[in-house]
Image 1 (cartoon, rainbow, N blue to C red):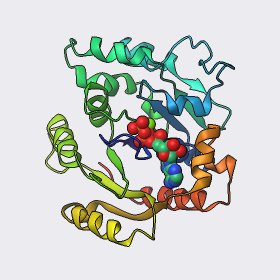
Image 2: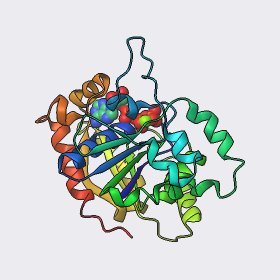
Image 3: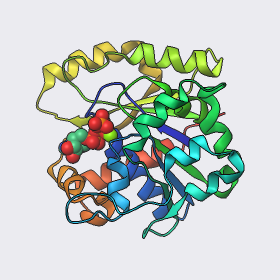
Length: 256
Ligand SMILES: Nc1ncnc2c1ncn2[C@@H]1O[C@H](COP(=O)(O)OP(=O)(O)OP(=O)(O)O)[C@@H](O)[C@H]1O
Ligand SMILES: [Mg+2]
């Protein structure tokens, strides 16, 4: 399965989801590739060492090479992680410039798809962490993925931009029914009124809302701060259990 974790809203848990799903799938003996498509490189930080002054270690290649090189060279951008079965294509802040450069290229939305062609058979799952912007990088992820996974955080503007996102994916893929799933994250059972409002907003998307919910949890936040997947940071915590359940449910989704 190729899953793009996406939402045009920032800070809703995309990277947390991408990192934890990737680690969990790998732990289940599924060869998994995590592609960091965000210049903020937060997912990369969880798997590659950073120096004391918070700079990434010198990377010979990164996701920019994956997108810009000939597809036959794409595999060179893949790095192994310390997690068995998990590889990563890291991001660096160079990606902002690459996105601009990409905008002038022909078939610019298909570059990731073409880069993955020689790689895809080596992996059971590929997880793409998207930036919080509807731009050329996200478009590349939408074309490459066979499922869009959208974390929704209850609160003001929870689903702002959602219809635009799904419409854009449909246009790019030339499909009327894009495969996407929404799920609630940073959920707080106590904010019943807010939850009810968001649930109402999601009514149009009801068929696409997963049953699994990820609660607001201090252990997930701490794991993120430490830059470690929750499976390693607190393997029995509620956050870990809820992401495992989300992972189980995702594996039942039929994709084209
Ligand atoms: N379930 C959760 N409970 C508590 N805190 C969470 C949870 N999920 C994510 N967070 C925290 O919320 C913040 C944003 O999460 P994350 O980086 O995953 O979001 P994002 O959508 O990738 O952000 P961006 O749009 O900047 O890429 C982080 O500080 C993270 O630790
Ligand atoms: Mg992120």
